[in-house]
Length: 306
Image 1: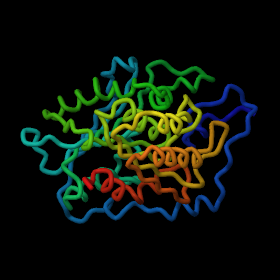
Image 2: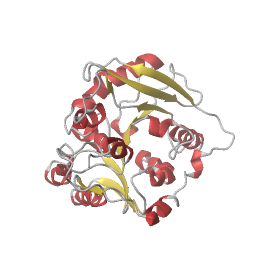
Image 3: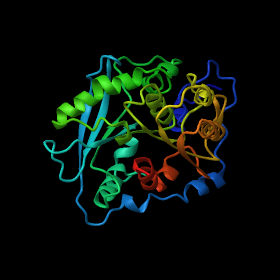
């Protein structure tokens, strides 16, 4: 039976196998969905009457030469009382930006920013929420591995962080009329699934660009070589990174790997190599539900100076 491409996209998979004779991913057990539903957005996602930041959307941006012939939507969050002449704000960049920016979502990042900035638990921060590029030309059937998202996010090369440094951030700074804080300890990159390994990969290749990594259900599996990261972390010179990993025991399990095990292996490698890190392993599935429940706490820890 041919594979249902849209079903795989919905479940967060990042490529199809070369044939359709392999077993399909394990269905999520009903108990897993119950476990996932125990997670609600953190209280900071529903702030009281406090100053609110602003979110500006840039639709169908096509200013990339590194990923040519692509368009993508971008959202830029600016904090309350933002003054480009007086601020050099911290940075939080989110892959799969649409999944993080909407206030009604599981994570509700802008609302959480508002709460933590008001409580002085987060510095004034600019959020960049960027979607993967959509190629101009239709993707032929059977070539899903070459879709923009997997090519950008799962490839363990410096290309994506070069895109951020050389194209995306200069565009944002020009739009806002200010420079972002260049201190990597004030710069976070975050993502879920392939966006999660993409976040780690970007910081790994350029820790001067991002010193803080937030990975939700990261795809440290054999999609485009990401399963090698535990070995690389264990055997490479330690990088100045602070890493927060989240996964759950009902995360994905298929021919590309086992997501719960892959995240446990990453956490073990970070522990072995003496990285500043935290690993929260729950009951959830391949979703942002658990991530949203601990989102404020993860930001507090990542941006703390202790």
